[in-house]
Image 1 (cartoon, rainbow, N blue to C red):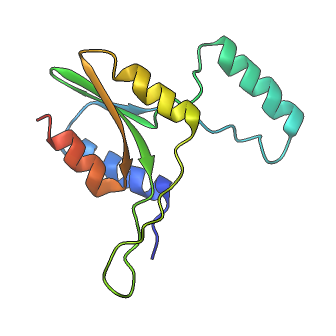
Image 2: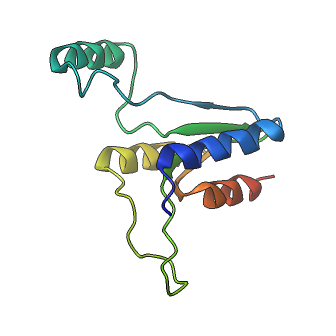
Length: 127
């Protein structure tokens, strides 16, 4: 069964909280986008004026010597054959640019992580 991106991120947040690792998420969704298009446009405009950057990663983790920015995607599903599916969630051009921009800083690292396990392993590689 495929776990949603939000469920993968919730697992990561729970894991971070248990280990008392400082982190925060950025609300990237506009809740009005499917119900009120005009309101969604106004909210998006306001957020942009306040500094919102398109493509911002889902979660930021601050460790003693590095800041990690993680773009969460769903993990590949396990097929009946036992192999993992080859389909991957799409990373937008804005997300790729944001990750590239973050990686220009010596004190930061950023990447797309496909599921909780990959995100956890990415964080652990810096501890």
